[in-house]
Image 1: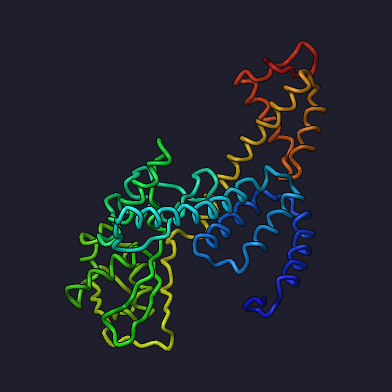
Image 2: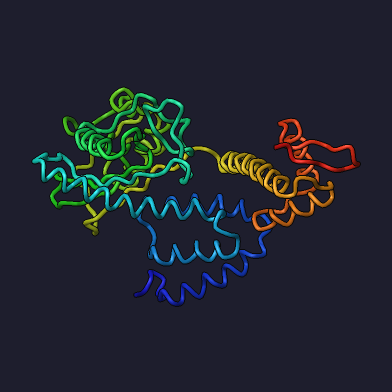
Length: 356
């Protein structure tokens, strides 16, 4: 089977093996893992992977290089995808068995909060991804046509998973829409936010962009990003190039495309890349601090008493598969653990003992 670039899976497997050779020379492997998990998340949610077997093969190669803990979250992401497929199948079978008709057929991915690089906002009534969390409106609800199906799934899920709460990530959800108002029956794939905008045209053909704010309960920046993609695809026509609150958007009843299946570009985060990179690095440093403290406690619990230099050497040895910490960072975390009463100094010079 060929990829879009004309290579076989065997050829790609060989390329992945070469990539791992380069990966082994990367000092900050945990930083690489942060960005890799984000891109893998996008591929899995949007079903963009050419081969799930190759995706898992790459993760196994990283596990061989860095250990199970390094790839545990990545592996859990694959587990969630496989479990969700079976869960959706059982849900649809249950609806047929109980004669409950869905207005819209849905496919749900239930994701473990700690495994995926996604977060819900503080206001849990409007879930979102961490990338655009700040621009979401807490009052947002999906289109009415979707709400019955989502409610039935929540009820189904609650019967077999007591005590668990589902938080819908609407910002990461997509919809396949049949464009019945056109001469040809185009099938369009778009975000749920874009669907919320397009459904407003069921009763009229012209809207001022700002009117979508109260109608959809989305923020203006989110609406502008979503509407921009609809204009670029051709489903909407704008009276001006740069969209603003006062822009007039008209439904394009003469839309024409060579393709029956049309993919609308998903709204991109408005967060500057510099700020996004800064947020990733801040999260990385918190993870390193936690990992460093756990490593030190684990070593001291096993050794009970250690000289400072020997402890630093052992910490460097155990952390080098993820990153290379400087000595000052290690000393800072040792001091933090002393303050937390995990370890303490002995009467001997530069020596620590574990506090049980």
